[in-house]
Image 1 (tube, rainbow, N blue to C red):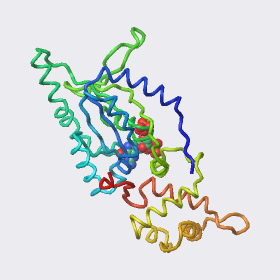
Image 2: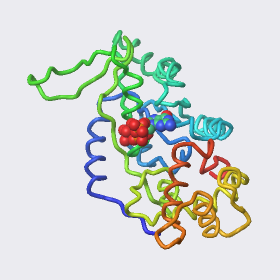
Image 3: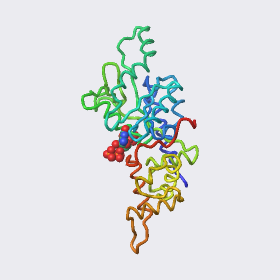
Image 4: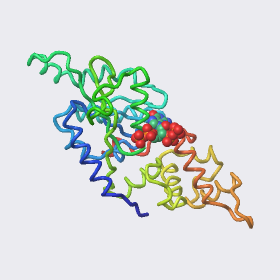
Length: 282
Ligand code: G4P
């Protein structure tokens, strides 16, 4: 399988982030809890050095809970502050302000010693496309927050959202480009729908997901689609087509439709909570 990426977009996004990052104290990095490594771009460690760091395991509702906890420990051991969240429902968001305060404790202490009082912590959200940055900002900021910064039409500048008296958030998130170090990373990003399906062969993709699920989550596919998990991946795909009556004209099985159905069920959590990469491999 071949994955495309767009260095042009990436260069621009990185340049913008380099500028924004100068203005902030804290980087809030969103990763997808189903693929916490593949959905990161390690460049952020260089870009965000000397900043307080908070990793959010977003979409934690779609990933296995014990795996979420393992990943939390993994990142905490590396010195990050970590919170599991579901930005769509708001679960986990309550604890964020106190974690931000902890993460920025040193900075606040430094400010206090220099006689700077009550300067809010400035934070920005970063992450790869589709990881949930906008959803998170909206959920955290809500409607009650006031926008600060420059007034429209007066001076062009950054818009900050005041979260509370101690924290301001840059209203536009930084976009990190995923890093395709190997095909596995690309494949996992394709599974979660971060790479547009039009550039991929959906049956191949579904077959790879079938392979992973049979190995790591035995029983899920047979329970959902009544397939024989000992068969090979393309046979299983055909069985899904049969059992879900995906038919083409002329009574041929429509495996492309079955593949889309499987990918859709997986991405929307209808196969249950599934984590695609495990911290003990890193
Ligand atoms: P981005 O700014 O990083 O590009 O991501 P965005 O907020 O647009 O979110 C991408 C998709 O992920 C959205 O779904 C959003 O609802 C969903 N999402 C964000 N956070 C969570 C989460 O914690 N859990 C779950 N389950 N989903 C989350 P969409 O399909 O584009 O839109 P919609 O179907 O929600 O309307």
